[in-house]
Image 1 (cartoon, rainbow, N blue to C red):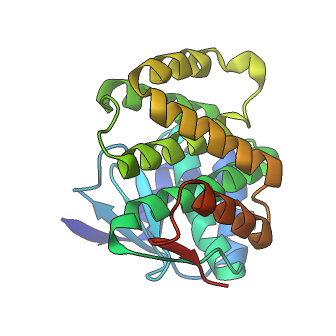
Image 2 (cartoon, rainbow, N blue to C red):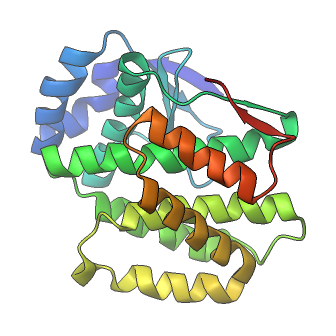
Image 3 (cartoon, one colour):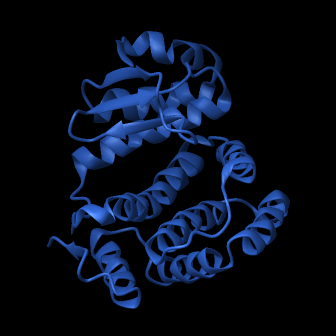
Length: 233
């Protein structure tokens, strides 16, 4: 069930309580993008606080945003829409069975770029979001998947998390290192895939579409994905 909600009703609490979000709203939201549709989604997938729909220029959220962590999540989704409208983002063609994999690949490339921008320019508390994410995973994810595609999807998801934690000062990564040790035991194959893919992204850098295309090309070749994913140039 989804309900359309006025933006000021959605964002009012964090606009009143979170100075970082006020600055972001004034500088980025109001100056760089027009109308956004906001929907309260009462059936949002587990593990997601919010998500953006590029084609509808809409943001769907679960619970009403009230905290510093919520402020980061809302700013993050707004930036997804801004980047989509202002940039030629990576475009992939894929078979039906690769839909989830492609979604994870695009998240892996885009999410750290957005969070670095929010952290450097507005000092958002991204670490709190990351801690909540790994706490959710500890409580909810299962053991290693049986099939190769699911192992790869889980590995890409881990790579995204690795790249996001690269943004956090090493002295504040204790919980993250503990989580990695736990994950390695739970999902050894996906763990190794995640490390390999994170290293590919680190080497080539995801900052431009040309670099992202190179990263995806390497992943397609390394994991034999030519039959299900291709790059649209």
